[in-house]
Length: 200
Image (tube, rainbow, N blue to C red; front, side):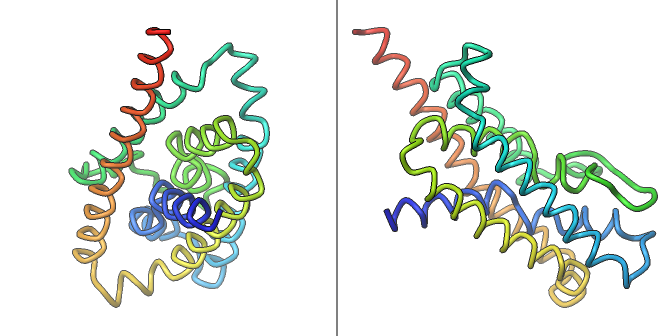
């Protein structure tokens, strides 16, 4: 159980990608007064957490409504994770989700899709649908991962000032490499399970 909790927490931290979101937070919160920024980050992280919990709790029902199998979700989640990881390793000038400048953000683009993005939603749904017995473990893992994400994003401007933008980019690429391996493993597991079901 402890191993499951640890591995799930690490996976969710990688998927939520708090360090990769640092440049997005700094950019989007640029026009927001400095005293207001922590409140905005806390609000957006709370929204993202609630959305992820909803998808985790209703993932099985949602899949049944759409007549989706665990294998299809595993393969789709692996593909999405892989594409996100590629954008982390080979960054685009506008970032993973595109440039979003303007006034104070509300839900978009920080809560969704920066934090609770497609890869995070697919991951929590996959966790809940494939092993619903350990739902408490997955909720704890998500809570810990979101707490880490919130703390990192609250310190976004300070971290970037201390370590520098290039160090943040290097760390994001390293996390992208790890996430690539996780995505490939998820994809292979889905294909392996599907092939085993066909052979029965």
